[in-house]
Each structure stands twice: as C-alpha cells, then as structure tokens.
Length: 176
Ligand SMILES: NC(=O)c1ccc[n+]([C@@H]2O[C@H](COP(=O)([O-])OP(=O)(O)OC[C@H]3O[C@@H](n4cnc5c(N)ncnc54)[C@H](O)[C@@H]3O)[C@@H](O)[C@H]2O)c1
Ligand SMILES: Cc1cc2c(cc1C)N(C[C@H](O)[C@H](O)[C@H](O)COP(=O)(O)O)c1[nH]c(=O)[nH]c(=O)c1N2
Image (tube, rainbow, N blue to C red):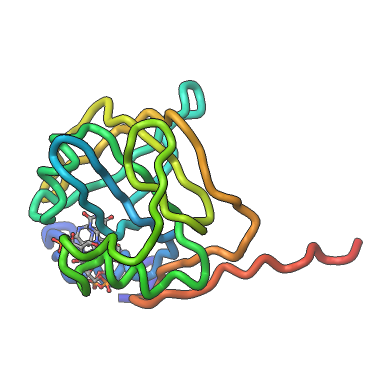
C-alpha cells in the first residue's frame, strides 16, 4: 500500500498491516523498571510519550501479557530509563532475550525517589508514580506523574525504526 491510498472503507485494518505501518515510525527506546512489595521487574518499551508539563505527566503502554505487568501494578511506581546509542544490547535483553529474573544482573542500579531502578548511564530517567490507567485492547495505558528526574542528557540517543535499532546523531548546528 503506498502512502495516501486509504484501505477500502469496508475492510478493517489488519494487525499485520497496522504493524507494517507502525514500523515506519521512529521511537526513542526505554527500559521501564519497577521495584517494591511486588518485586523488581523491567521491560523494553517504545510506547512512551509526554502528556502534560503541568503537572509533569507521561504515559507508557504496557502489554498485559508481559511478565512484568502484574509487578508494575502491585508496586504502583516505575522509572522510564531512556537509552543512549550504545545500549541496544540492553534493550534486546529487556525485550525478552534475558529472563526477567536475570535482567538486572551485572549493573549498579540506583534509585531516585520512588525506589524504581534507575539505569546508570541512561540518557535521561523519569522516576514516576502510576496515577491512572486505561485498558485499551491488549495494553494498559499507564498515566504516570513524574516525581524526579535523572540522567545526563546530551549524548546520542537510541532509536527504533524499521524493526531495528538506530542512532540519533547530535550533529553540530549548521553554520549561519
Ligand atoms: N507497543 C508495544 O507493545 C510494542 C512496540 C514495539 C515492539 N513490540 C514487540 O516487539 C516485537 C518486534 O517488534 P518489531 O517492531 O520488530 O516488528 P513487528 O512487525 O512485530 O512490529 C512493528 C511495529 O508495530 C507495533 N507493534 C508491534 N506489536 C505490537 C503490540 N503487540 N502492541 C502494540 N504495538 C505493536 C510497534 O510499533 C512495532 O514497532 C513485536 O512483535 C512486539 O511483540 C511491542
Ligand atoms: C523495540 C521494542 C519495543 C517494545 C517492545 C519490544 C521491542 C523489541 N515491547 C515488548 C517487551 O519489551 C517484551 O518483549 C514483552 O514484554 C515480553 O517480555 P517479557 O519476557 O514477558 O517481559 C513492548 N512491550 C510493551 O508492553 N510496551 C511497549 O511499548 C513495548 N515496546
């Protein structure tokens, strides 16, 4: 299907056509982590976006089939660790290449305010409390109040587009 040719009215958009279309989008890549009475868990996510800056609020969409889903709900807190250009292997680990119980091994995770694990060397970290959620299809849309920020920013970011990881280059501004 080329851009601009709408699917015929009576034909619903198939999941595979939708995924093919969604694969055209470039997204930042994040490790979404949690810790608390429900235990520690984390997964790779790209469905993160800002909702409001007054009060600072973001959303992340969580598949209810993910092994981490019940842990997030029990803890009620999470950290969005936005990955840098060199952290693609970590993204693959947290996307299922490594079992949930071993995903945090080998790194000195820290915390900010909620106790959710903060990744050392993340581009930026948003430490959040889950304040609302809406079930939509296979996912819950988690509305999260940002309680603290971490990370250094400024480095090159990791992107995901066309079903592979890429680098967001920070070119020097063009000469005037
Ligand atoms: N939002 C998500 O839950 C999400 C996003 C990206 C990838 N994934 C997972 O990673 C696997 C590999 O993804 P890929 O990009 O390499 O190829 P893919 O063809 O499976 O997915 C292409 C795009 O479709 C969207 N998508 C895929 N599965 C989805 C789902 N279950 N819910 C919502 N959106 C979905 C994403 O934007 C994804 O980048 C997917 O099969 C899926 O399990 C999930
Ligand atoms: C690039 C990319 C982006 C995403 C994902 C995967 C990949 C490769 N996954 C799926 C998630 O990371 C993981 O694969 C599933 O949760 C299954 O892992 P568990 O072993 O059950 O934790 C994912 N899952 C989710 O619930 N919300 C999301 O936004 C995303 N985004």
